[in-house]
Length: 114
Image 1 (cartoon, one colour):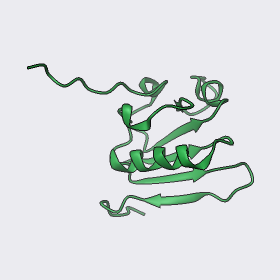
Image 2: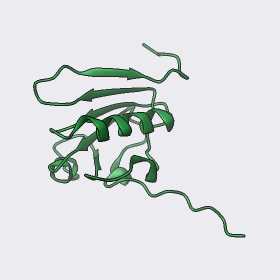
Image 3: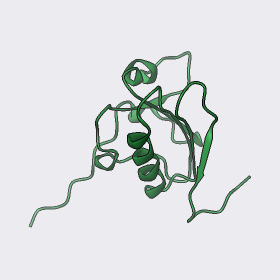
């Protein structure tokens, strides 16, 4: 009997400071460039285009997440939001397009701390 392997972290997730309560996630074709580690901005995660969000172990438990869709179709972004909430994110804020309003999804299994 083989032990079940833990899913991998998504790209750049190893750069996330576990003490921060906000995790930024970029989606779309510019995600890799925008999430690439840089001393001038907050550490961020890239969600690879066409990837299954359920194949990753997201470091989001009890954290707030900001998902910037960068023009991606809404369905893959929604699947990412669902997975982040399933893996314990307290709240997920999503911006689907540059001109859209910020949408807030609150994890129904968690109480709000603000």
